[in-house]
Each structure stands twice: as structure tokens, then as C-alpha cells.
Image (cartoon, rainbow, N blue to C red; front, side):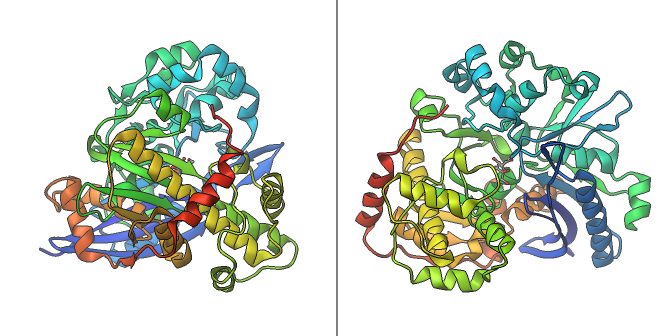
Length: 495
Ligand code: LFR
């Protein structure tokens, strides 16, 4: 059989991509047909996603996919970052621009939510780590606004894009699990949580699962993209991290993953959630994955720290080239200073080099003297946070691992991958960088009957077809233990 072409729409916090994957028995080849920037816009003091620019990027991408495939696609799947949503009015039109999760509007309601529903109860019911942007906080912050009063529907970002493409609505489960309104044991709505917080669950259309049909491209979309219909849209792991984990080229079960990009999502794939108080205090999340799995992981600031430094340096007229910066960082003194890359204080944009310097000062460590040292501080701090997350995940779940997979954009960053291997004292397998698009496409290919089986068979195909890099741990792991101890003094309980 000839391989069938599928398109993955993968929207990340800094760029969107449309990727064509050709899948057949023993074949899985990707072509990125379009990439476009994702630039948030602040208006009236609120940080927004430029959702129509993103949708235009999706249409341009599908047109490029049509050119690449002679107009024929076996199906399309959409994934993006989590937690954010658009509100629809009674006519199904979008009300306002979706608010960016890095906006600070939720700060005012965190304490109020904790008073209404204590963090331990919220965790026992939803298994979600505390992050100030979880959809529950956004919806409580929106209470009393005219927009929410007018809303008759709510769609998470990938579901909103899929709605514009197909005219059909649904709430995809893996992404829904990041709202903090899903019970990870039943994999259904946590109604008591919603009731207690005054959140109207009827705004959400019915749940759908990865692999479910999600409509077909509308005639107007076919005309605009020059695709030949019918083109089905398939629900995938619409949370990009769910797709990225499905795209981990693991051979067995004893693996940990780190999905690196703007964020580092570090953890394990489990069969059941871990809802203990220890797990809550360690700020571990139980997001839902493809095929009934649980993504037991912690959010770590990720390459956002470096991206924000670069944005700051560029604004000051110095824009060091990333390759050059990484080469210099590789020869800086190791572990000279480290910051807590899990600290939500780093979520908001702006002044990142200064904030990193402040954090070093506060913890009695030397302040980085230039861009290379700041870069080294960020990468050492990320590797240290990876180490801690994977050690905690194993301890809290009772599952031991012997391999760490680094997927996502950060898999290209050889220094980060090597430092992670060194810090964890475990071999790292780096790649694929496009794990989210691959996970997205693999789920579609299963629905189309091109891949028979589940995650194991999909991953087998990844192992056979994707180029991977191996990093063996080097150096003295005790240096990382000492760095960890330096930070531990600062620790604050979360949630
Ligand atoms: C990664 C990601 C994370 C989520 C964050 C915000 O792209 O989806 O998993 O916590 O973005 O939505």
C-alpha cells in the first residue's frame, strides 16, 4: 500500500506548524509545510492570543498541505497548548479574543478559590498540579464579566480551531483534563468541583476522545485551501503534551519523558492517577493521555527562560546568536549558580535576565556576568529541575525508570540533553523534535486503519523510522546533589 497523507496542526506558544505525515506499514515520514509565528497581543492591560492570525496560519498551512499532496489528505488533527479557551455567543460566534495563560488576571482569585475549595480537596478530586493559569482560576476570574454572561458555549483552543474548520463542537478529553474540571479516575467531569466554584459545565460541548471522529472540513474551508473533500477531522490528543507523549519513541515501560519547548514537562506515563497528599505537595499533575493513560508530570519553566532572556537582550540591541551562545555556555563553569526552574514566579513575561540575577542573589549565589553565563545558569537549572522531577515522579508513583526520552524542540539542544543525562545519572535518548505532530498523526493513522494496535505499535513505528541521538551520563552526580541542596534552603510549599 502507498503511504497515506495526514496533516497535523500543532500550535505552540511561540509558533504554529502544519506538518504532513505520510504513514504506511513500516513508513512514517514528516514534511513541515508551513510554520508561522504566534505573537501574543496586549490590549487594555490584558494579554491575548491573536487567534484569527493563528487560524489564518492554519488555513495557509492546509493550502500548503494541499500543494504537497495533490489536494488529498486522509485526515486532519489539531493540537495546541492547554488550559485556554474561547467563549461563543448564542449564534456560535467568538466573544472577544482568548486570554493568554501568562496574563495575570487570575492572581486576584487564587486565594478565594482556596477558601471555597481547599487545595487538598481540589487535588483529590482532579489530580491537577497548582498552576495559577488552570482553567478553573480563569473561569472564576471571569465570573461577573459581560463576556461570560453572554457565553452559550466554551471551546478549548484546539477545539475552537476544529470548530472553525468543521462547524462541529466537542471537548477533547486530554486537553479537558488540564482545566481542573475533570476527575482523572472516571475520566469524566468533576461535577462537585464545578458546582462548588459556580462554574457552568453546560458551556462545554460533550467530551470526545483521541481517535474519535470530529467532523469534516467545511465546503468553504475546502475552497479556500484547495483540498479535495471529503477530508475528515479526527480528534487527537489535542493537548500538545498528550500528543508529544504519544510521540515518545519508547521501547518498554521503564522510561521517563521530558517534553521540552517553551515548557519542560517531565514525568512518567502511568495507568492510574496518583492523588496522594505527598503528590500534591510535590506539585505533580495527573493529566490524561491517549489510550486511557495518565501523564504524571511536573511543569518546569523550560526554554521560556532562555527565550525571554533573548527577547530582553534583543530589545537592548544585543541579539546574541543562539548557536554562539550555546557554544560559549558549554565552556562556562558548571553549576556556578542555579535557580528554581519550577518556580511560578517565572511565568510572566519581561525582564528575565534581571529576574534570574535577583534569584541568584537571593540564594547567595554568584550573579551571571554575561549572556553566556546566564544561558549556562538557565540550562543547569533546567537540568537540575529535570533531575528533581524525575526522582520525585519515581518515588511518588513507585515506578522506576532506566531511560529518559527528551522530545520536542529542546531535543535539538545538545547541551541541555547532555546536562540532563548528567544530572539524572541516566541515559538520555533525544528526539524526535516534532513529537507532538508525530503523536497527532499516529492517532489519526490508527483511526484510518493504517496502524493496527495501540501506543506500543505506534511507538514501534517511531523507533524504526525516527533518527535519535543518545547521551550517556558523565561527570560526578554529587555536584548535582550539592546544587540541589543549595536550592532546597529556599523551598516554599506550593498551592
Ligand atoms: C506545553 C503546554 C503545557 C501546558 C502549557 C500551558 O505547550 O501545553 O503542557 O501546561 O503549555 O498551556
